[in-house]
Length: 350
Image: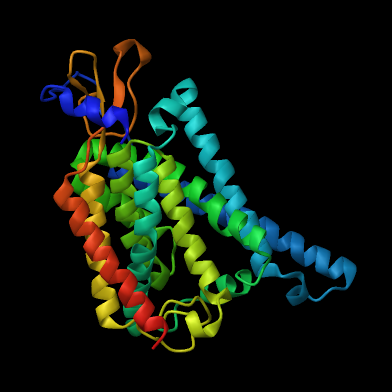
């Protein structure tokens, strides 16, 4: 057990240190503005890259289809998003960028919880995707691009399809949009607004539906652990599970979960979906019970006066402590996860 957990339990009941600190932005209008900036950058980069590929194809006499245009544009787009995210937060936060974004290591318990919650959460988000596809089966224009990209070498898939998007989008949505929206509208309102904007950026309604579910989990884990590494890892694992599912042998693929072109909607068995919901919710409770908090030497919980994941100045003397999760919540999560794993095995082998 982490010694910091024992220390946190010995401290007196923490009090919030409220300071007259101006609420950070953006608000709703500012968030829409930053979303338009991201859209504009994506369109600009995509247009320039597309023209460059066409010019290259004509100059070399190569068919555009043979250039793997979709995967190349995805690579260029994700790299552009990362550069934009880094540029924006660097200009806005300056030397305090790491402090405000909560760029710090995560506790082993939180990393373990991320690894555990990723499979049921990803399956749940995928099934939400399937249900939306029932009503909009022909609008998922990105699925063929993603399916084609999933055939690329594994290292390229993990770097371009998982790592770069996870880092770029978490910096932009958790560290920029989410910071202001949660500070101004609270945990519930700010999380829902941030998740909505996170879904909107995915454009395609089918893909956006699963992004909305994932966005809520990303924002809550970020606030609970106060480490940007946690939502980055969860985001990365979710993408990796989605991309690599189609590379598995057909006999171990989960119905309704394989990434591929639109060939009709296949749903994941209902009992497995219910088990995934139970596993995700109970693990979420463990996340909440093991949440991190900044505590000063006299046992007072530090806060700038609004909900945030950012850290205090070193002069405050506060240290990040992790609460010990309650035994009951751990046992409940263990039981729910065992049912989920059992249901997953049953579905795969029957």
